[in-house]
Amino acid sequence: MNFYILTLIKAGLVAFVLLTTAAYLVWIERKLLAHIQLRLGPQRVGPHGLLQPLADLVKLVTKEGLIPQQVNKIYFLLAPFAAVMLALISISVIPFGPEVEIFGQRTWLQLTDLKIGVLFVLAISSIGVYGVALGGWASNNKYALLGGLRSSAQMISYELPLALAIAAPLLLSNTLSFRELVETQSGFLGGVLGNWNLWYQPVSFLVFLISAFAETNRVPFDLPEAENELVAGFHTEYSSLGFAAFFTAEYANIITACAVGTHIWLGGWQPIIAPHLGGIWVPSLVFAFFGIMSLFHATQPARRWDKYTFPVLGLAALGLAALFAIPLLQPVLVPLFWFAAKTGALIFLFIWIRGTLPRFRYDQLMRFAWTFLFPVALVNLLVTGLVVALQP
Amino acid sequence: MPASFPDLYFPVLLQVVIAFAVATGLVAMAFLVGKRVRGKVKEMPYECGIPPTGSARERFSVKFYLVAMVFILFDIEAIFLYPWAVVYRELKLFAFVEMFVFIALILAGFFYIWKKGVLNWSREEPEVVTERRYPDAV
Image (cartoon, rainbow over all chains, first blue to last red):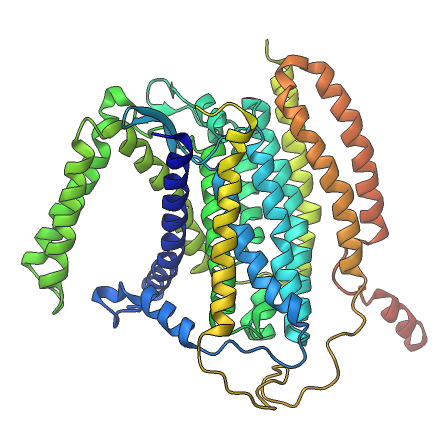
């Protein structure tokens, strides 16, 4: 198959999966937050509220896109446009799996593997601040202005520790390509523990995580949209899909940040359990266990709908288990599973922390970035450099 | 496997096109689809229902400007570290010493702006005020 046609298919697939995941992340987040707070969360639209993202989309499309009188129209429209466009670009260098053979053609499970992949993602995420800053300024609203300014100051302040934290594992791997970064983390320590950068670089991973929270404007650093003081911050004046654009961008950014963290520290698509310990069957076992549990619960329905939803869920999970057990598909699916599992775990952490921690105060936030995270990341980098330099 | 420059960057271009289409679609649909009803009150800046006072185009705390300036200096430093990290294993201690000198210079600047109070976001401590008030009282 032609390289360009294959790329076209891959790009379409990636965009579709990214946007769907971003939409369903809203559902997952609402559900998880609800369960953390002992509520049920969305459950009116479809079984367990599964059609909620669709309903939200329909509602947002049919709402009136309001352009208030006082705004600077060009920038007001440019802001959500820039936010969502920049959030979707950086996924093009993120790999999802190793080199595989599909229809007799070898290809990457990735759009493209730039030699400067890490720099590319950093650069695009730096420009991402424009969406928020422009939105805040162009709205010509005091809340939006405060939110936009806070956000831009916060995002550029945490950009520094983020960049320094990423530089430290690069000293170990000596490459800027995500694919090579993951390949340097192959193998198992003692035959059991994955040879991840995390074990050598725990400090930089923590700094990266904290900065990633701030970069994506998430709790505990969600001051740009602190609803109890700024209404909604930079997107106060946005309605309809302009509002949705900011949220699509936010969730796409979270996915990208988690994928970057997975690739640099958590060994990307490398399996958690070594192949000689049966790692290749783990996805099948996980799905099979999930399916059997669902079928078991279907026999003892606790709620009215459980009679219908659990068998469907169980059969779907068993089907997936069977799919992951086909030897022909395993080289493609198993790395995808590990990548999705690790990224999903990080995304879960993002939501979990939102349900757990209160918000920072603004001066604490800035002081934390400049006088704590920045020096810590720098010292970590120097120590790593010294250790690597003294290695024979 | 793509190896040539155009082949490596073609997918990026494609992704940019897709992102452009999605972004344009979202923003255009927002302001084209849906009933539009205009109203004077509706188009005022939102200030929690109270008639807005003044404009949002006011002068604003200079701290944000300072942070932006400081950021540019330090971020350039951080970007310098990337090519350094890639060739690090070839140069070893030489690279370390070179970068150590560079980072030490940058750090000197960092401590200077720290001492100057650029990074101090909270208001001044009320010590000066208490000093003035109490000598008279005692």
